[in-house]
Image 1 (cartoon, rainbow, N blue to C red):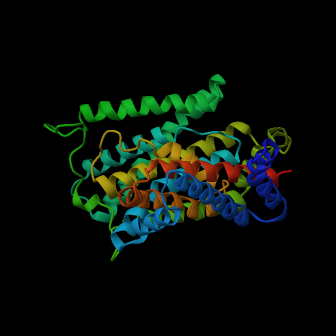
Image 2: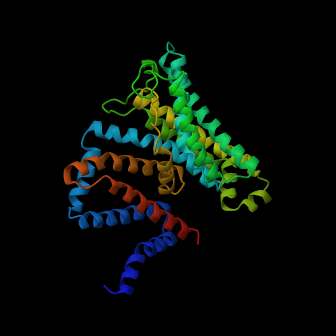
Image 3: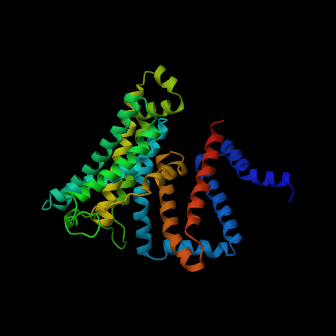
Length: 354
């Protein structure tokens, strides 16, 4: 193939998405981006000497092969959905919040501390109080980022990334101190009281966290598209000068968006601790925060679109283990699929704005 032909072939996905972005709606753009990423992944599998069809069938079998596997995929999707919606709220306001990982970690710590503090509370009370404590802890930590950003004029990307490391160290110190289990071989809290465990859905190994996450996404959609505050977020994201001219306070919008994002991330940490580990474990949140950015962009910062985006990532990652076992394709291919899909969605979003 000649060099001009290769250039045309390389540019074809971007041109196709640009055309689609001008002619079709958001759902079509996301579906086309997903299809293009799967085609690229199939090419990579073929180049590795494996059958693309066998690889994708292995992923489907690993994700949907049994009720247990479906439940595991739903559990994996839950923190992605909650934190991804929070990231999307910030992006709608033009705020790049990369601090979800630290907010998830402290949300888990807050939920664990609250659950252990009321061991004899009724199950409903214990769960509600623990999840509320997790959300408050996440919101408080995002509030620190907002205060530094607005008060000292430090870019939010730098602030939120650095606060992630501080949050992880704080959780480590809590587990090394009063919140840790005495005599444990590694840093973890005591087991939560059984009343604080999230109930599981019948016939699945999935807890009710996924239902909480879907309700949160629906609430975020209503907030963004049906309230004056949401309108202010969208105006600020499109043009801060226009938002100021319309009378919206940049600081209030920033505080509100960051608080909501932190609360959702903290809630994700609480759900993960109460629903999966049933204790606070050092490093349980590693990777969740940055995966939330992937989910938010894959859903084009639309809360309703983020629901299938989070489910797609959760089921894809769950099924990737079966692909590695059955045909020997490494699970790193899933990261490639996620990255390609995100790039294609961003191209489509940019095309729609032209």
